[in-house]
Image (tube, rainbow, N blue to C red; front, top):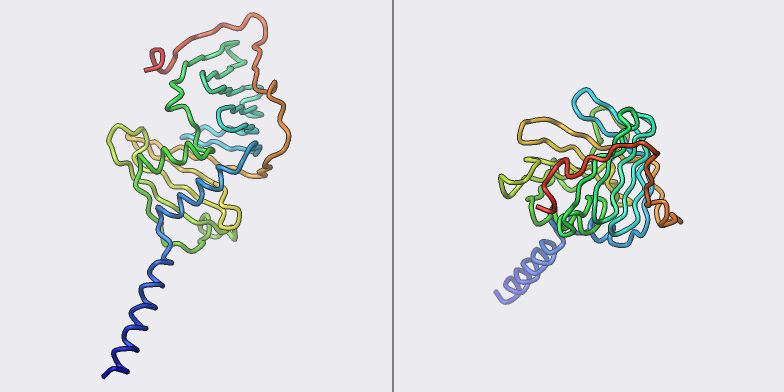
Length: 222
């Protein structure tokens, strides 16, 4: 009896230790956030698809607050964020849309702060499990897929799917579904980390005779 009890105890202990190694979706999202906390600068090709609109460009980010996207399609369009304001330059209209941004909510997703906000405002779950799966049907590219469901109806996206490279723990694709069931997809490729980006690159100067439209999204810092 003592021998059986001892073996039973060892079995129970091994099960308990094994359970501690189970990777939850929340823990995996935390690991991705930790990965991004080590990044100083980030450069990648970006593709944005919204409805029938497709946009292409290069994204530059200097943590924690500087971000710029130079688009090749639409040509010469620029998105610029400096931690205090968001600006969108529309060359065809010779216009800049400028929005003051509350710093407490201004983090983008490609930062540890942005990912921490997602962890706070969304409930993560694996789409199919913690093992890599094809990014899409028929693809040889493997990713970890996370589904984020909003905790509050006030969030703009009711669901976000994040595809993560299992080796680098970098975000490869984000697909967000809005409350009106519109789908927006961001793809990131050709990522380069911690290279040199001069800070002056994030000082955008508009061409002459450009019209400025302030607070096009919100009133002030609301």
